[in-house]
Every structure is written in C-alpha cells, then in structure tokens.
Image (cartoon, rainbow, N blue to C red; front, side, top):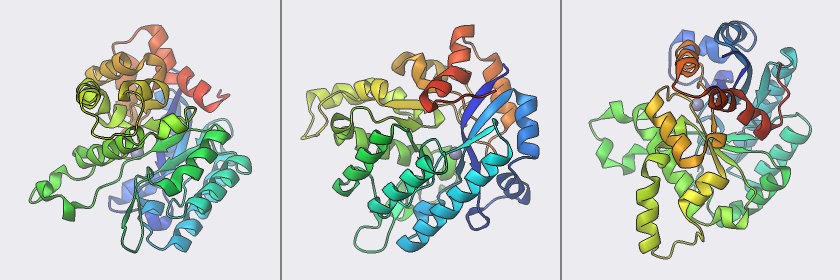
Length: 317
Ligand code: ZN
C-alpha cells in the first residue's frame, strides 16, 4: 500500500543513543538519508518521529530534563523542515515538572508545529518518590492543557525498575521489548484510566503502541472483575468505554494478524493506526506484513493512513 502514515518512529540526540550497535545509532541520527529511502521503498508517505527512550524521562535533575526536551524538540523541528511533507514530530516533555511540561508542550505545538507529545513512561526524580506516574494529582493541570490544545499524548514504553520485581531475577531476556515494556506501559495506562482521568478530561486522546500493550487481550476480564468489585476505583466508566473513546493503538513492533484483528474487534477499526518503531524494528518487515495483512481494502486504508490523517490533522502527499 502506498501513502502509509507511521506514528511511532524514533530519532536520538547523541546523549540518548543508549545501548545498541553502531548501525542502530547511525539510523537513529539519520533523518533524510536511509530513513527517507526506506520510506519510499516501503510505501510510507509520512512519518511522525519522537525522541527515543527513556531519554528525558530518565533524567533525575529537572533542569537537565527541561534542557534536554527543548534541545530535542528544536532539533526535531529543524530536521522536519528539511524534508517537507515527509516528516512530522512529537514533543519530548520534562514531566518531572508539570508546569515546565505544559510550557514546553505549548511551545512545541504552538511555535514548532509539533503534533502532540510522546512521553517515555514514568519520569524519574530524586526524593522520596522516584517514579512519577501521571495519574498523580499534580498532573491534572498538564492533562487540562493537552486536552485544550487538542493534540494526542503518546504513552511510550520504558523498562520498569527491576530491583522491585523479583520475577525478573535471573531472566534478563524478559526485560525490554520482549515482555517488560508492555507490562510497565499497560500498568501506567490502566492507572490513568482507573484513576478517572478520562472522566475529568473526556476529550483527551492517548495513543498506545504495540497494539495496546496487551490491554485489548484482557479488556473483558478486567472489566468483568472491576464491575463486580471496584474496590474504591475512582473511574466512573468501564475500561472498554475509555479504550473506545479516549485511546488509540498503533501496530508498532506487532506485525501479526491475530492481535491486529483483536484490537479492531475490541476498540473499533477507527482507533487502530499503522506504525513500525523504526529503527528498533525493520521498516521492510512491518510494511510487508501490513500490506499483506488480512484486512478489507477500506480497513487497510483507514489503519494505514486515514485514521492518522484525521487524528493528527495531516495533509501528507
Ligand atoms: Zn518505540
């Protein structure tokens, strides 16, 4: 399929490259070379880029987090301008300081033309609370601001802190994307939903990668248990309602028909969008799978292009 739009693709600053091969590092810092060649070859018309993770979220010094987010967003906006019509961007945000996150979001969207926010899970900080999850009350002004701007919030994975998770002991292969990313990210998304965030901000739109970080698979069971015994849960509606009203999912790194069909069944085809997770995943593999996935022509067009066009207000080539 030509004209595809992808929404979870990454770049890096020199200090956020992280572990990986020199080839991966080269691809993370390439905007207009191999990246655009691959897009042309794979039928991807437009890609929305975001800073790789955990980057800003792992910076325990708030001033450093604010500075890193600004530099990342300035670089991204500058590079987007060099490949007009092909690249868009999400803002990185210093969530360690909710007021600073609001300021940077407003600058990134209003002045730089970025299309929303992509945040790499919880933010680290010094002090008694080392993990900042965004269901905390101090983030309510942030959520009000992003709802008012009418731009999506992409909750991107990161590793949890394994010191507190003995079930990972001696099984390091289950960290990162094989299992831990979805575990951490699903918990964060469920905290936001169960905490009543979308009751107070009903127009807020959140995006989850990897076909919903496994939430669609367990949606019926979680709702069935919570409706019978909510145990003081603040949320007024079912998780299914939020997943069908306030959440979108992308296919990043999940190139397989059954979970795609499950997400469509549980959330509606209009809430599913194509993505790769390049350069951590192969653009050829993701595109080849999607082009041949068992979908009607109308659903392939919606997931591959028009859902993202309408959510982000795009005018791609
Ligand atoms: Zn990613």
